[in-house]
Amino acid sequence: DVVSVSVASLLTKLKHDCATPLPILQQVADAMSAQMRARLALDSPTQLAMIPTYVHNLPTGNEKGLFYALDLGGTNFRVLRVQLGGKQERVIAMEFEQVSIPQHLMFGTSEELFDLISSGLAKFAEKEGDKFHLPPGRTREIGFAFSFPVKQTSMDSGILIRWTKGFAVTGAAGRDVVACLNEALKRQGLDMRVSALVNDAVGTLAGAEYWDNDVLVAVILGTGTNACYVEQINAIPKLQGQVFPSGRMVISTEWGAFSTALPLTEFDEEMDAASNNPAEQIFEKTISGMYLGEIVRRALLRMAQVGGLFGKSVPQKLSIPFTLRTPDLCAMQQDNSDDLQSVGSVLYGRTGVESNLSARKTVLEVCDTVIKRGGRLAGAGIVGILQKMEEDSEGVIFGKRTVVAIEGGLYENYPQYRAYLHDSVTELLGMEKSNNLVIQLSKDGSGMGAALLAASNSMYM
Ligand code: ADP
Image (cartoon, rainbow, N blue to C red):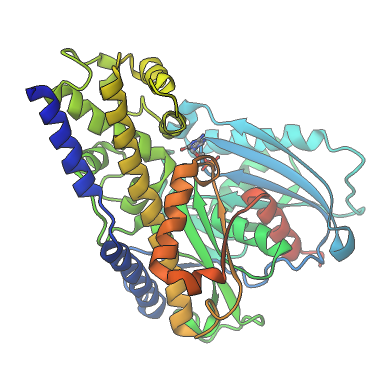
């Protein structure tokens, strides 16, 4: 019949537009490598900001003492404290708390947001128990994991370039976020000092490096996305003349802004146009958790409107942006039952849609198509970074064991996405090279890494 033909052809078009065969993956990886190198060399504007983080000493395991961390990067912020005991004792004690950010503060003023953060920190600090010790006369030091694009000016300062991931806070862009935090700490009457400013990718790298020296790349795949890696100073022409004893520095690629060679659909374009950062963060909008559910919703809405996917009428809720979220796609894709009962109940619960079995199957195919593209493109991005590092000094990556640490709720919780990412890396590298490569979930989170960097960058050490 006419209706099902139409849905089928819409699905075919979607699959076609989202397809990521090997040549496209290779094009994405190559473009990523080329832009990384170009930006490091000339600092001419490319999609990738390639921000030098000033992190040149990664944690070694020898760090000792009490350190705090603040982690702001998405829907929640976390506060954390850790008592480090050096090489033998390692992490003696660690505690953290998570505070959700009320929606209105994502659109409020910088003062309101930083006041929320510092009061959360103050409440947490009050509960410091006797497992934690600060030598007399010292100030508590904080590692601040702040996961938005920042132009780092030193290890403990950086200018916010722009908000991403749905934040639209006024009065912070163009300012030093450590100064914003320090002012809020002062208003709160808290005597603490920020010793390290990092983004979540750098925090993840530092946290993973603490346990394993082969970690050279860290990737965030959560609400948003970013990647950072350890670069040789002599491969960073724009830093020549400055001395960093380790000879290395962590570079934050800010790859969310990448957009070359990506297979995009009309739904991506519509979502982008409706976003509060149109034409920005296209890679992020294609591969990260904030957006995948919304792309699927837009595709389903079109199928419902044009092809009658869910019958004659289109439930109003399906027209509301972000009613379908990435964890919903994940829940649906875990449904192995014959009648796809959970798919039906997620659809009904989220969008008010009543679905028959054939519609549910179509929904699953739409989810798979968008998730497959996301996971495979994320994999291509990772290969782009590894390829660039290998080209600049042969053997540094594929001649030995190399670890890529990945953090974020999307990678952690979505098995299909994870499998597509791994497939893509293996397809691109081939068996031999991928054998030496370990891609692993980082357990500790970026907050722990930020605390470790506060320790390795402590004013008392
Ligand atoms: P953030 O990136 O906000 O700091 P997380 O790393 O925990 O925090 O990532 C949260 C994101 O991970 C959510 O926005 C969502 O897109 C994704 N996510 C969380 N849980 C799941 C899930 N069960 N399935 C798929 N994606 C999930």
